[in-house]
Image 1 (tube, rainbow, N blue to C red):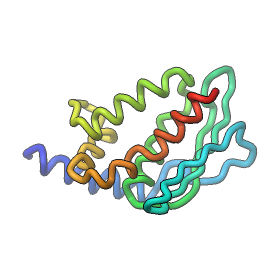
Image 2 (spheres, rainbow, N blue to C red):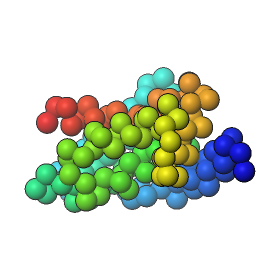
Image 3 (cartoon, rainbow, N blue to C red):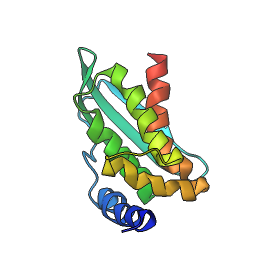
Image 4 (cartoon, rainbow, N blue to C red):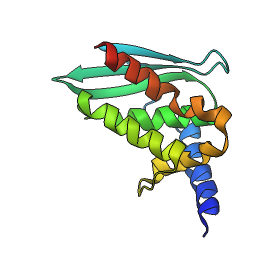
Length: 141
């Protein structure tokens, strides 16, 4: 299978899969923090909910609406956050965006599925929306 066919297959299975069945797609009862991710240009809008204990994300979830790419990207972010230390988030974000936008090599098929986005520069905000909003929040902590 050539690289382009593999990316299309990953897009279909991973991005469309997470769009249909997002991970922890629910409003959290009593989050420690709520982070809003909003793109006024396209209308994608999510809230990230975090429970943090001893500098580690104990639980994460999200709610909101947007295109398949932004929903899948947010879903994977939330999935990866659970159990993660706050200082581990920025390196993960950098790795994800390097894969998505620069085509950095990876064995991580969930991240690699977003490499197809580099062919659609107008969708870059869809890929990075929740990641950037989380980073902005972290920078203010």
